[in-house]
Length: 88
Image 1 (spheres, helix red, strand yellow):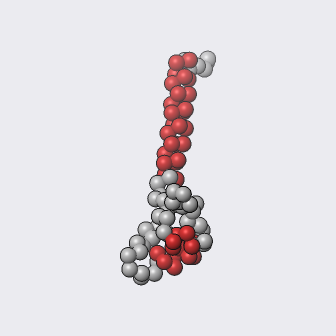
Image 2 (tube, rainbow, N blue to C red; image 1 turned 90 degrees about the horizontal axis):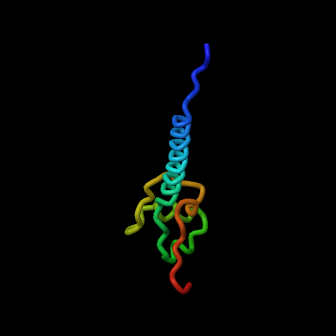
Image 3 (tube, one colour; image 1 turned 30 degrees about the horizontal axis):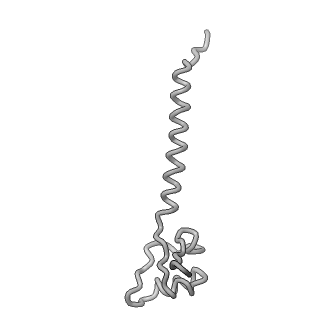
């Protein structure tokens, strides 16, 4: 029995779908990684050098400090970028 070969049109369709899938995964991954808000340019954020400094403030019961809505990570600046004031 001869093996039935796929038509060229069918192969091109699957190639295009694979390219679209790879591009979609890339953009979704990039948007996921940039979803974390930037750190405000406050003096507390400038003084914080380690994740423990951030945890001491955000996990403590300090007034007007928002709680951290996720598990502690090794570093904060992996997801959150520091904001700089213009001219500084």
